Image 1 (cartoon, rainbow, N blue to C red):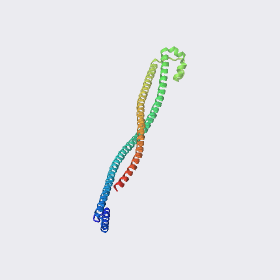
Image 2 (image 1 turned 45 degrees about the vertical axis):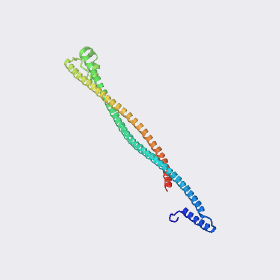
Image 3 (image 1 turned 135 degrees about the vertical axis):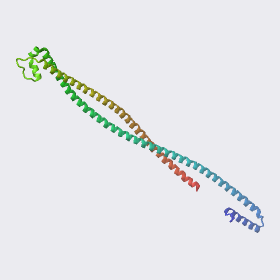
Image 4 (image 1 turned 30 degrees about the vertical axis):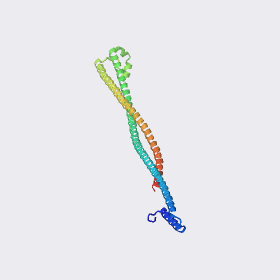
Length: 274
């Protein structure tokens, strides 16, 4: 019994020895009692073996379930971590895109402001030039009208010479004055050239103003479309980034809960294995 390190067997051997001694004293057959002792021992060992088998089966079942739960939780955590990483990366990417778009919008606003300033200055120069040209053209045409009337209707103009003299800013004509037809034609010709130049320059200014305004309107419209598009991009990318950040926060919270559960499972598993 000692060789097999079995307390139960040692106890059985001790009881058998005691029965044998008692039988020698009383003269009773010890084998009947020994047989009963062995039968009881076998029954006890079988019962213990059954209990051990049932306990082992239970432990094996719990170990299997715990391992399965551990794998399930680890997989959940892995999926959540991947989801968090993906959402975090995407959110950071969107925020960088928003930053670039806002920088582009600021540059676009600065460009449009510069265009507005230049267009305003150009239009102001045009208005000034136009007023000067129109004033000059009007003056030349009035002078031409007076001269043509004078040289064309002589007598009538002589009767109203004060008007002509005031316009031309010439000294009063002598009482005995005669029209110089050749000189008049020359002056009229010069004024007609001036009239033509004034008219051409005015038309040129009008044309350049129209072209400048057309170019300005085209670029301004393009900038408006670009601005609207970029602003919409900023709006939607910001919204998406915010939603991703919310997803990261919620998933991180869920992962923390699952991690706590996994820690408990690992502790239980360690207890079973121990």
